Length: 615
Image 1: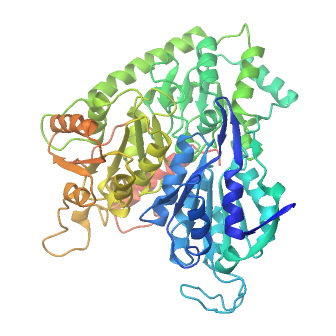
Image 2: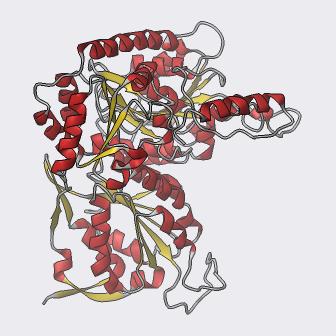
Image 3: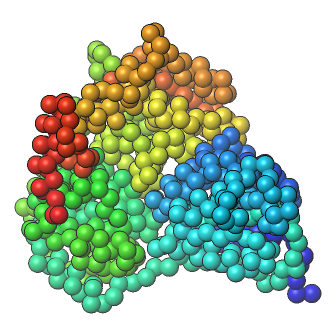
């Protein structure tokens, strides 16, 4: 017998269970299970298949489709893209709820397998409940929304299509260049249809993540450019971590005396105490890193797509006096910003450079300047994070309190708003797994769901989620999921009564405060209600309390660490205070004409900064 009769859904689940990855720690399953919210479109087909395999392929129930996909993505990020999850939903709104998460995974190059239910392939009962009809094309469903935010998309209209589609899905999920979300839209009738699948489809498959080496001519060119330089700076991006190149980078920077700055995705590439670690770079970076970037004669970006926050909208380093080298596994990123490309795996490239540069060192005056700037920034850190004695605390003071109570292996989780900027500047990362901030898509609502995913990936670590009241109100339901599943997270909720970060940006562009802080929004005469966030969290099963000061916060953190279930601490903060990092600039267009003199002045400042850009 060379085949086995299975439904499409049964075949999918059986195939996923046979996918393994060879890592430095041995062979491990690639899929850790599935998040599922059932409805018509997946409850009968995939629901039955998942139930049959529930002992070996666990299914987790969430409260929101976007939230569960965020948790799955965070899990994959925390596992450094070496293990991942599947997510399945019903058709219609359940599926569409995952589109935002797909965009997040796409922007951050993170793997997740999305399997939304779809309308009937046979079309007999059309239009079914929740079906959006395209009048000119009956093949279109809401799942077509996944196409622009998926690295690979397929609609499985016949069971046997899995035989060709599943290997392509795995290639995408594991490829260091194309890594990102995969969407397999499976109509509900097709999920339940049976086919005689070949046994060979379900053979145990051991994958290995490719480590492409550098092309010799490109390598030699970069080696020569570095040897000619005296003031080099490395920018470590997320690719440094996903390549497992952090140890190699630490040794390389120490041996050749090269300071290292980090992007949001790359933060934690070096322990903050490493003598060459300068911290975050760009709009949300440290003054030490940004000063070095402006003075460097060569910048070596490793595993970064050089987002506008990293380059300060292409104004951070001189286009005339600085050579930019891009080391990236993908040619798409390696050639960005007219860089000298070195297309290769990050670790492979660092190892090759370490061998070839033997005998060369950065100028001693340069490394001394880096150390001096770092010391100055540490003085700034102490000043902005120390406990306040009056008034509402700043975000920086809250983060200082959290760090004072944190252990070295704790994981900080955040996304969107002003907090990621403060964390990028101020959080002292101990290792590559201790900093988990989603800022490629800057997606409000990721925080708590992401914290759940991080805890599932690293159950031995304490996971601390920092979130503003705005993001909490957008998505908080997975706090209840964390309680239900027994994955404890600590949530620090900073209540500045609105969208404080965007309010500051609004004012910086000359506009009046409007529709961001609750006090400046359309409301009844009594204004927006003061929300009892601790009471809300308690209603979802978490332990919770509100505190009024940094001293009380630190005391509450001790209680939270001792707790056995998820714990939320709410504290009111000042929406106007943020930590400066020098003369950084971010390109946010300002109206060319306005009745407001402040907007006109802001536009003039905007034009002056635009002249710093290369075009």
